[in-house]
Each structure stands twice: as C-alpha cells, then as structure tokens.
Image (cartoon, rainbow, N blue to C red; front, side, top):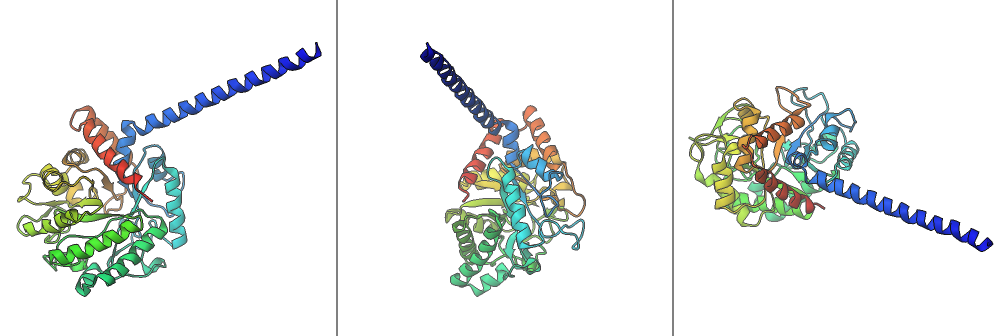
Length: 385
C-alpha cells in the first residue's frame, strides 16, 4: 500500500513534465512561425529596401532610427561626419573611434537580420573617417591613378578598407567609376574623385579597390551610373542635364567592372540624359537601369539609388512618383540621407513605406518587383562576414 502512494505522485510528476515540455515546444514553434511570417511579410520586405540617415552619436530609444529599425524593419543606415543643415560645429554621427564603433555595434544589435551600415569613404576629399576624428588621412583617387602602380593602389585601398571594417561598417559607397572626362566638373573632376579619364586605368585601380574591400568583408558600390564625369552641374543642388556633355564612353568603366566580375552594388546617378532616356533621370529610368544594366549587360546584383533627397530629384519630382519610377526601373535599395541643406525628416522611413504599399495596392508596383529586390538583398546580406 505504501509503494502505491509513492508511485502515483511520481507518475503525476512525469506527466506534468511531459505536458510542460509539449507546451514549451509548441510555444517555441509558434514563435519561430511568427518570426518567419514577419520576415516574409510585405512590410518587412519594403523596409529592407530602404536605407536612411539620422542624427545622433549614441543610440537612444527616443531616436527615430530606433523605431525605423525595430518597427519598420529598415534594411540599412548611412552615417555622416557632418550635418549639412546644422553646420560644421554640430556633430552628426561621428565624434571618435570608440564612440563610432559603439554606435555601429548598438545599431546592428537592433535588427532581426544583418543591418547594412554604410559610409562614403572614397579617399581624399570625400572622407567621413578623417584626421579630425583620429583616423589617418588618405590620398585622392585621382592621385592614385596618376601614380598608376598597383602595389601602391593595393596599399592605399587596404588602409581605407581596414579603417572602414574596423569600425563595423559593412558597406563603402566607393569607388567612383565616373570617367574623368571633364577635370573641371564640380562634383567629380574638381574634387579628384575619379582615378582617370582613361577607361582601362580607371578600371584597373577601381577593381583593385573593390577586390581589397571584398577580402575584408566590405561591400563596395561603384558609382554613379551611367556617368557623372561630364556634368557641369551638381545633382545635389538641382536638375542636372548631361545630354550635351555626356559621351557613350562614360558607360565603359561600368561595363568593364561588371565583365571583370565585380561583386557589390551599382549606385545610380540623378543625371538627365536625353541620349539614353528623354523622360526621366537615370535613377527613375527603366530604359537605363533595366534595359542597359540588367538586360544588355546582365547585371544581377543590387542597384542602389543615390540619395533621393538630393535636389535633382526632390525639387523636380514628388516622392510618390520618384519611388514608383525608381522601383519599377529596377532600383533595389532606396537611399534617404536625411542630410540635405533644406530639411530633416524624422518620418522619412514610415512615409516611404506607406507610399510604396499604396502604389502596390493601386497596381502601380507589382509584388513580384518587391520580391525580386528582396531576394537580391537577402542574398547579399547572407554573404556578410
């Protein structure tokens, strides 16, 4: 009789543990299913197609970027050393090496999937990681092209890739492969951003730059397709028509980079060129992005827009039209710097998502187009080190 009394509680205990294990497994399965559903949702996919800038040297829950990543599934961020609207004396995202490294680490922790963290670190004039913040200065690409020695280029590129990687960045919006056809061009030639006006010289050094970054686990973006080197205007400031100055040879560096097996992204230019499309600037042009880049040259990688808040777009097209045309043209990632000279918008990301969803509902953007971009983004992020 005493043995029976001992056995019954033991059986009840085992039964309870089995039920608890089943419930826990069920809850875990439900949680995993919920997470998978969220990642496959339209909102998630659209969020992954956006990259945005923000103000702040530390990550606070009150900052809109916290909400953009956790609630709106933002795919990437871009960091700057200077705020164009507030002026040089106001910090933007970078104050020191230690501060920057912590900010990037904290940003990455917020995201359910790998977060793209981008910087413009071309070398020379276009450098966010400058001596002011404890980094070593580097030569301009034009100077590297003039030296024209691959060992020197490799050493220079290793230095840039090293400091980018050491801070936690996984994207560098470089190298510039705009052909230096006009040394006086305000945004390319005058700043020494292009390696050369000779196609093969430019491609040789740009390829080495990209190769070195790839080895260090940093994604490069060649820019600005289909060529900004002949422009006599600045697309940051307004409408930029290159019809009368652009030459077909400006396409050659991009084509050669792709032929040589470039792995990374192609960044668009907001230039208008009647020779290629008589209706829209390149970023919004299906003829340029899809027919040339995708179909003619077979580019299967990511196309990322230049900053959609630059005045070449923002002052001439509404956001809805710009998003519709760019996505349908084949752009996979839409960039909003939130670092223009006119305004700072804390709601850029949710507003863009709402507009894209509305365009899908109206049938102006297909779900298939979103799925195509999302698949490319997933593939690229899967390769991040």
